[in-house]
Structures are given as structure tokens and as C-alpha cells.
Image (cartoon, rainbow, N blue to C red):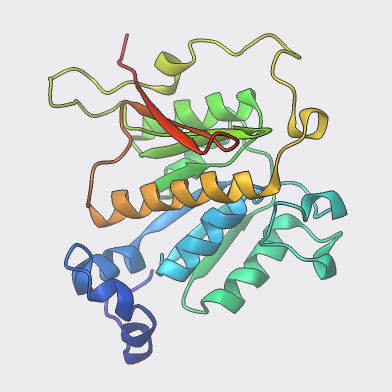
Length: 251
């Protein structure tokens, strides 16, 4: 288990965090104690893992059953040409070690399913979903709701992205339960209606924008600062350089 005390080297490394009144030494210690599970070490997971590692999150779990391919490198910036063919979990772990040796990495070289999700999710404090299919999204969202773990969800396509935070096990200021993923998407769209990135394409830098927003929300949740995107879906249109927010509620 990661201890909360910060070493002299860590105090220097995180100095720009510690001078922020909203973070300070106590917030940095919370980051060090935190355990975050990231679903997918791909386009979204790459910036999430890099920024959470740089921020000093003590333990990062990575779930991915894929290997690095050359076509990944246009957007999955945690990997490199020299890691093509490697397991994405191993490639990401090596990159994290270069970014911050104080971060422990737990590799889960498997595909998350409805069966294994609850036990995996229960081992972590916060979950960040960077998956690219509805089956996995429903599985992780249902598990997080059952295990009472906050979930930072995002999706991207072509030039658009979205981010939200799910905490359906808590109530809002109005006394109503917070909405769940199934309130946002009651059922998956028919097969083929939402084409994959491999079919439709995706601008590489878009995943960096959205993944970085996910990392921000995860840090806010851990440090207990700001207003997480609970009940709000943040939409980003890259071509128009426009952000919009949609509010949604529990049914």
C-alpha cells in the first residue's frame, strides 16, 4: 500500500500542485494514496494514464487485452514505434515508469466483461472508462454503480467527444439520486449505427483533448475540489472549437 508521506523528491516534483491552495500537501497526499482503474490504454487511456502518473496518483490499474499496432500511434501517445507488437498494458507501464517512478502500475491484460468487472472495480477508488464499445461501457458502468465507485466516462468519434461523471449511488442537491449511465443511454444503439474509429476515423489530437478532460475530472474527484460533471454531459466539437453542456437526470 502506498504511504501518504511525501518524500523530499516528491515535494519538489509536485511543487506546482502543492502551492495551489485547492490541492496543497493534503491534496497531493490524497493523490498518492489513490487507486485509479483505467479501462483501455488506447486513444483516451493514453493521456489519462500520462497525466494521472505525472500528477502523482499512487496506483494505476490498466485493463487492455490488445497489443500495440502501427495504426495506434497516430493518437495513442503513451506507446511508441519501439513498442509495436507489445501488450498495451506493458507498453503503458514502461512509459509510466519513465514519467514517474513513484507510481505503481497494476496490469490487467484481459477484456473487461460483466462477469469480471465487479471484482476489478472494487479494488480501486475511481474508474476512468476509455473503452470504445457499448458492451464494455455498460459492464463497467453497472459494476461501478453496484460497487459505489465514481466513474469518469468519455467517448469520441471523428471530430467530436463527450465527457461525464457518474455517481448514481449518491443523491444530488435536489435529493434525487444522481443519474446512471443507463439514464443517459437506456440501451445500446443497433449494431452498425455508430461506426468504430477504424471505420469512421478519428482525429488523433481529439482523443488527447477528451482524455485530458477525463484526467482532470479524476483528479477533482480524488482531491475533492471543484464541481465534477455529475448529471452533466460535456460535448466538444473540435471543428467548431465549441463546448456545450447538456444536463440529464435519473429516470
